[in-house]
Length: 92
Length: 150
Image (cartoon, rainbow over all chains, first blue to last red; front, side, top):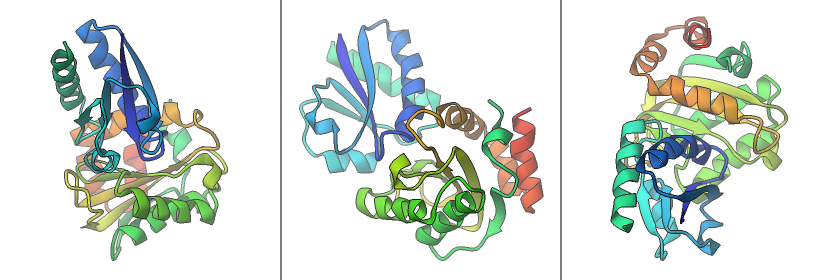
């Protein structure tokens, strides 16, 4: 079971959009996962394997034990799907 | 979920002239205030959060979806759109400059999700973006959103 977070500034806008798009991509990999939404200030206290977020927020988070994946276009299912698949493969 | 339920008449403005991102956020947020979805404090909160967190509301090339937290002065679920006459920079490395500035408010963490995800699917379509960018009047812009929802 891997722990995944979708992270945005407030935890209720971007991350909600990202969560539904990530779910589709992650289901396709067949991996067992738990996916939650949080905001940038709360993520450092979480036990996470993968974190999906924007460029600017990734920089604010600094060094984390989790692998951080930067999404440029949160509307783009192809980008999200490709990066999610690569990130899951890199954990194995 | 129909987008016309989320965007009340009067929540959409085309050809807005702005000096920079703060003014653009204030115009889009101001439409939420005018349509009863949020208070002025909510608009201040969005500007303050972008100053603090960076351009977290810029989600796709040319597109911002401005929002703050429910407790920052949201009153009801509501969406708004300001289409800028000239794009402005938000400081987003991947997605500047921005000319479509959406805003939303929600009284809690759940009530806006259905509409937001419908909006995300709507924005994903290049032809919808093209039509929004080509709309010359508020009514024409509203029609693009109205027709997408039916």
